[in-house]
Image 1 (cartoon, rainbow, N blue to C red):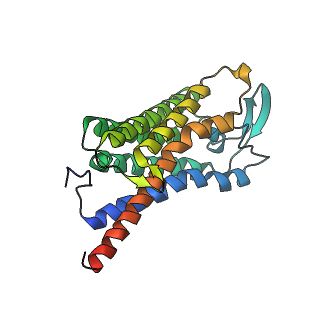
Image 2: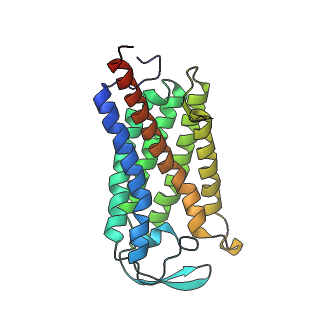
Image 3: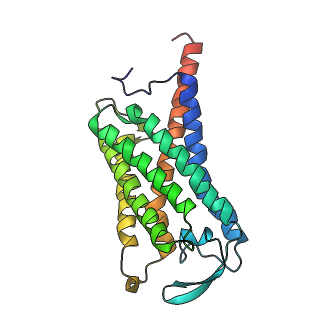
Length: 236
């Protein structure tokens, strides 16, 4: 039913989309670990950009005014996960527009989240060493759009009469919190280099809330679907 904010698909596709959301969100985050381990030299999650894991060649990059050798043999995995994960999450964001909330705010959040997924695809298709400017546009623009989408989706869920909970947290408020955290990280990405901020941490603060939200939302939908199956089996 649209009025209850439920996805207008049968239970099986609902579970498939939810599972794909969990897997895609985890893929984009966790692929960084083997990629970092396979990097030639020492990769720093604190000082180095996520983009360094996706560069297709080897060479020196300036990090906090100090040159550092960057070489990522696992770049096809990193860029491929951005393309695959971003595509999947963009589609899911559109499928979930009524689940978020069947309102203007809900649809706005859905479209922004989908746009953020497509911009993630762009970062994988145009690595930083191929076109640094376009990659930066995709990366910074993607983070901004993704977190604006979380803010809009969170507002939509908070304003909708039928509240959703994940543990003790109201899911709309939690989503707004994710969006605010990510947007703060996005603004810090534009800070002057002279501030000497830990680039790796700042980028992940900007990027990760988007992926974590999809993982949590997918997990919540899988949990709710399992609960409904148990209730049907018990004849409730």
